[in-house]
Image (cartoon, rainbow, N blue to C red):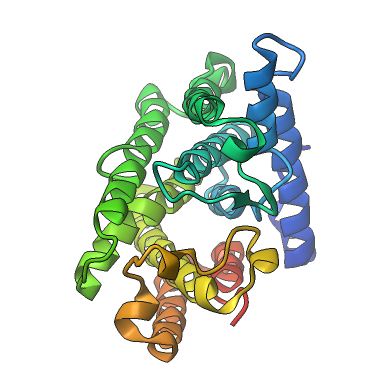
Length: 307
């Protein structure tokens, strides 16, 4: 499917755009994941179980919205969207393990370590991470591309730094170490900018790889704000939503005695903070005009999920 023209995008409703992109990323992940009948069959079956048929694909949607804003080539946007979803799936598999957050439910079904076993889940997370870098570094996606070599390397760098010790993995480490402790709002924000925000920021910046330098600061500011807003809303939903709605065990943060925006600010103030972050995100996009409409719509989609 070729990238829609700006006129076609304007005609497409936001729900239709979301549904189309969600189906597209599902189809692409199905193609790039190893078939379950290829050895090692148990590992490949578990990889597909963990990465397919689940989630709202928010990171892929942000990647596609930024790509449309910046007229990124469709094949590069597809590779970037697949890569961020594979990294995200990797993080969920590992986060659910008994040595981490110890959750039996993910995306409305048994967590990978429950459906298979701990050792398989560990390997699944490792393999999904490796596959993400295989996907985004394939030479054929850059054949005849308008991206230069420096931009191509930037894609890999953005993904690696978002997943590493100063990004997602580091944030999870701080999260585990913070159980039962009091954090300031600034300390909590730092943790979540790493654990959740880093990959959300990378999703947007990967899609915006073709953006003019004059727009990058604006796009990055939006990415930072919406990454934090996503986590604030997650903290609220952990208190207010049920497990069926969340697709994971509700109330886990309280059960694990973890500091959250709700425990630090209170529920009402956390909601006010989420609304304020939404306004900041919208204001950040103002210089980009109507071309940033999908990002504006996604800001609402993220911050107004259920409260």
